[in-house]
Image (tube, rainbow, N blue to C red):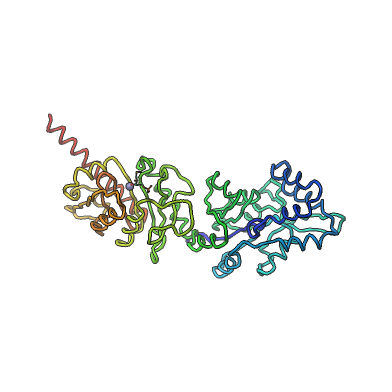
Length: 426
Ligand SMILES: CSC[C@@H](O)[C@@H](O)C(=O)COP(=O)(O)O
Ligand SMILES: [Zn+2]
């Protein structure tokens, strides 16, 4: 059973296009506000101390003027309304975690009818000469950064271990929360930090960009992502990805076909949060991303579509290259009377298997056609001459079993050939 999604979303600069506190301070420009801003950004003072100092520069008598300005300049990021509608339809819990202040957060959000219990923001007190900020959601033992409104503590108290945590944000105040998340939607400073820290992220401009990814339901294929990563790390330990070669995939959906595939040109011996992307039955990414799917994605797609495989694994090894060339003229390489043939669910004592071998066309559509022409549901693999092997199965486990069996058979055959050559020389 997969984990359930829960979404935590920043307000200033995420739901609204601009940071409202900075907009207020720029507009009213109280003496000394910029020094305080710089102290916050330079992390010389905590966010709580800095925001408290900023608002203490404004007289409470300016409440009406400040509130009206905040509302007048606030602009909601495109797609937010539809985003909320889809979350409601799919019953995905949504929490706003904002370092903003109630006197502008609440009226800006009012048209969206959000449950007040799902909106976390700081509060204000206009009873004294200057504006005072109140901190109903301070840091708990989970955080010692003196955030003011502590997103880390809120996420930890409002999401369970088995939740798939999603964070949407834009600034330094969202970074601690992003590090807790399984998936981050980031822009601006937060996007740069996600790239720098290797967090699993998607860039966004609008909430439509976020919806495009959420519609693929990443929490439902998270387990497959992790299983494919495990197989990839094992193959990497075997040095099966020389020179960025190799590509792996796992089907996440049947109808319409969708599958995770390794990103093209990456060093598959390394594990990052950008190792795979989700593609459709046209071998195109299901969402906007800088990543390119494997150059050989169409071969994976052909195997899924024709044979209904669950996972497709492609590696270039010395032995599969040698065997593919030695037996190319015979259109394939046959094996019999080797115990490991049972790995292909062939149990007869005299069972034999012939692994087809095709020409290595540089033109991928042509190569895909060639592979399609020899696909045989009884033989879960095909060799490409002087290139590598594609092996598949109904799951990552079975595809890995088949790939390992093929590589065993190739190495065994090659070494037997060498031995017989040596014997013939003695
Ligand atoms: C760089 S050599 C290997 C590539 O040409 C290709 O055959 C391959 O296996 C990896 O391609 P990729 O696009 O990274 O999935
Ligand atoms: Zn290849």
